[in-house]
Image: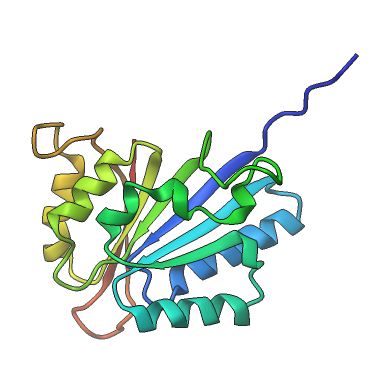
Length: 193
């Protein structure tokens, strides 16, 4: 009698506007630690997207310097909204089902991290996040709550001709005081659907 082994949970961290890869890299290291402790038994990969080529090179160097396995991450230079449509093409090799197949996100879950510039994100990226139905969670990091407000509203508004895809819902907001004794703070906003 053949016993079927359950599919491992497949999680792809999509680090949007990744810069030098700091956020995605720190989360990847946490998953490595959880795996070593037996708290996570799945497949985890990281895709970072960044407009600035030099930042992508720095992110790749940071991943190597922090001993991330080379088959678990990819850093892609380009516009996030352009990458979303062909994300299967960019998933790391750890997502291969077997040695003869190309990597694919099939049956995987995408967790997005969006750390936009101070002015917020343009509509194309926000709409791209909404249309990426496999993305069930998005963590939005903002250094300017006023600029983030429009993006959060657009991520959560009802589906329309302009805002395709299922809306997100804000599930938590955590202010982080990274600049003590000033009026400045970061927001970490969790959105789920």
